[in-house]
Length: 326
Image (cartoon, rainbow, N blue to C red; front, side, top):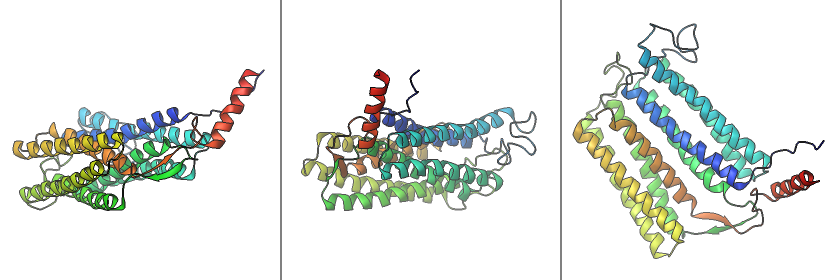
């Protein structure tokens, strides 16, 4: 009987797993926003249990729909953990370079930390600052998941090549800072807005600032981010960057404009519930594409590790193929 070979995942398999992780990282922010706009944040009123003495929802402890929405969102954390674990095991099996292993490990640790922060936000009755601190790390994890997706596709034995001159990368850094301001002011706008996260809380524990003022600050910061992004995109075309990078830059600008239009519509319509998940979802899209675009500045090209991404992984895969045919 032939021995069962150990798994030797290809670059394609690794990238599919990384893409699923990226989608799930963005998706859980959307389900989290659904928890908020449906007033289900305290459908499970404690953590890590759903209710005192029960890990799962209890009939009559809260409206069933609120329990279902909140508990369902909690269960998605396990999907994220499974996706992160699959990516980590895949890059270990493929014997990828340290950079990729570290990124994959950070995803797993980040998800666990996020679950704890989410639990804390429940324990403090969804105070705006706790909810903000729950959302912002999610955006960081989306950024890092997008970066991991790009780096996994680069052979470990490739040569690092700079695609952008320093001035473009410097402007891109300023743009990244502006994006951070957009996200922070966005959480503040939400914290001062009408959707507290639980139907019984009302405005208790909300950010006590003028909603009109903070919404305008948020909007102006988006314009600043778009301005610096346009400078970077112009530089990409002027310096004749690869066509794929040029197309990516156009897509990024398009997504920023769409996100801005959604935000303006929200403001003028009085922030109807259905617009919040759409706005949150587009936030993940913008962050992900900004990260992917940023990653194009330095890439690994060439190399001979075309199967698994690492020389050791390719050798391992070749040995397993020989054993299978023996």
